[in-house]
Length: 415
Ligand SMILES: O=C(COP(=O)(O)O)[C@H](O)[C@H](O)COP(=O)(O)O
Ligand SMILES: [Mg+2]
Image (cartoon, rainbow, N blue to C red; front, side, top):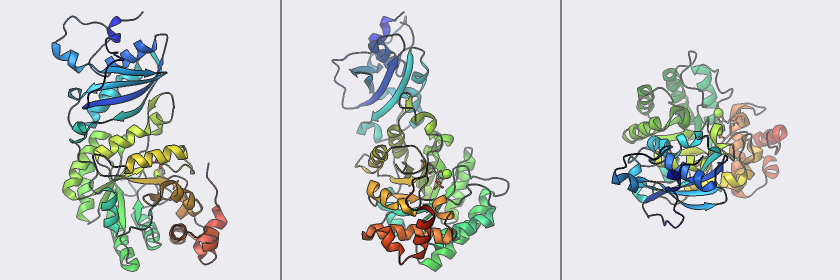
């Protein structure tokens, strides 16, 4: 049974206006034509419902999304800007990434890409720092930046955690990053951890003469998240971290507004993304996630490794890094490569990203045979070697910590 109403959303002769949002969907109909399926997606993601309606104000016509291209199972839909509230990622997602995924008439649906016009992007501030601003913060321009997540990811109390942080920072790490599920547990309350880690930071900065930054995970319920961000700024730290998907984009945008006033960069952790990005037939692509996160105003974004423990091909990782860094309406985002990395994989990562990348190694630092400090040194030694064009094996002859890391992990790519 089909409703003629849906095909009114299809016009393959239509030329999209300059100021329209264009969505690219991969559509798998279930027992209906591709044209009707595409029309249903356009209808449900703009103004329609399942049947023709008695009353249709003239304005509705203008607001209808239009399918303007069908190429196999790839469908392109143009959306008039008036469908969208200015500056709201939640409302954008409720429109083009909402009900459409649950329609019975489709076996699968994947939102592959979104092209945004300047007219839409101008309502977003984007990243506070941008890659240039992050490099200026550290005074480091000639190499990738480094991060480490104290591991095990949760379990240390504030003193133990601060000691690990000191070991990493004094060994040469730039960012110490809370893990995605470390927030404020009974044995390691946020305030206490912040206080102790900032003392460790001060000590490490004095000893190394290098700038150090803490990626404090402020993911929390509503106002508490803002309170924690304020506390971070009060301690003189220049960044916060947030789990963008479990917190939600309203929280991310609220945090971005707060961080504008506090002068804080935002590190975005994408935990939970694989619930909807991984299936090639159904869900939302990471391309879309990176773009909306860049608009929402994060400064660092995890894009994968291509060689580590998490899924994601080298081509995809490269593409995501490009979306982070390319010229756009808002500042560029520092791509973060993380997940199963260790010093032996640094050449692969630099080859994939160049130097504008933050290399995060958790297990690959704290699992070093001689502990965190040596692990941090080994990571920096691997980066120094690659930037100088020296093989790791060669460099390891005069750098014991790197040699010990290669003894343990070699060049293995974790599964
Ligand atoms: O804690 C880690 C990595 O730890 P380790 O370095 O010990 O593997 C991060 O949560 C993952 O990188 C997230 O995955 P992604 O970066 O793909 O979002
Ligand atoms: Mg983690």
